[in-house]
Length: 157
Image (tube, rainbow, N blue to C red; front, side, top):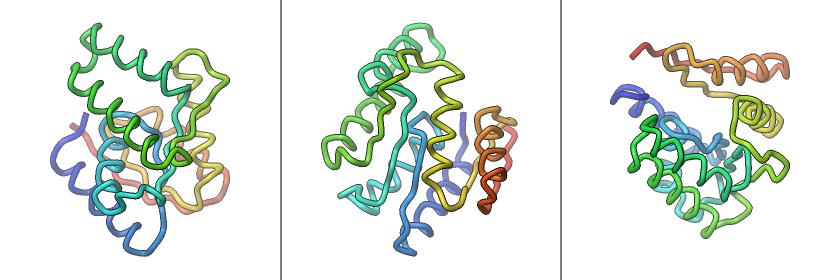
């Protein structure tokens, strides 16, 4: 869940990072990850400056999001927008989408493993923690353990 303030902050941070000729890394999920990827597509249509780590293969991830939409956890539009975005990234620059071919389920363990991979590839972390997200807290903890700088935004929605 995000609001306009979160979206504005994410887009601003992504633009600043890309304007410095750096790249971004995301977790390929809804909300903050989706917005960060969308802004990267606007700034860098070749998507050479983005790495997206997902917790499974894109095929499994797609099934998971469509299932979550059927369960009413997210909307069908959210699921399809994310799927289309990830498929577009893979089509434009396949090396930008890093799929985990080992995990067969999308569960908390798979997401935490994905967070580990994100931090392994990162030299700093800009974290947008909405409603005390456990996943974001996990990523921050891993970044601090790796001793990389963390810039944290906190939101309660």
